[in-house]
Image (cartoon, rainbow, N blue to C red; front, top):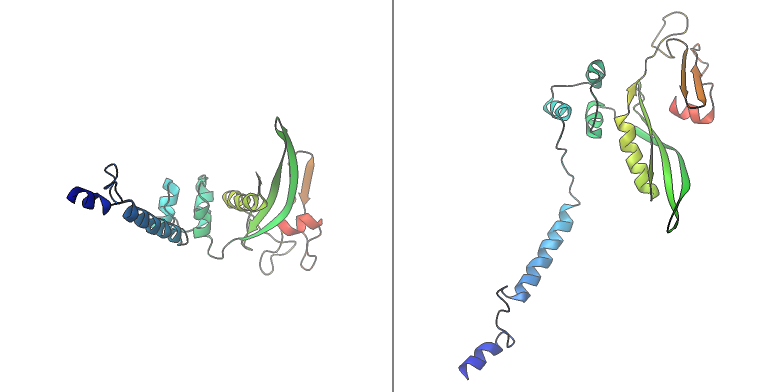
Length: 200
């Protein structure tokens, strides 16, 4: 009779198969999961994984021009955020949906074109494809930061005031598209197509 009373306290099954009290374990597990979800909302501190990132985090490299001078490859977008004090402004140039034919049918994806700049001679442009628009834009912003390049400024005519235009005539070509930039005087503004004006 005493043994029956002892087993009835635990529902007739004791402590199970050596795993302890299931009720306590369930409560502790739920509390731990709540804590895990809360930690995701906290800001994560940047931990550099490349040698260049560690030099930037330590303060050895203080300007992005030092990286361009030695042609170091930038593998972390946090490096650009740390070295550009004014911050980068991103703008979505175009979002283009496209479909890919697979054995299960057509799969729709989105291609996002994003340009970033700091209004101080640094600009980057890149493209990324993803299943969702938000994911494509977020990934394109990161790739655009990794492709930031410096832009030289110059004068048209006499060197009066601050540099306001490109220093010389320059031509760039990508595929079948060719872009030619020509210096202009003060007050002329940007004479270009609508998409090119966003970049310039």
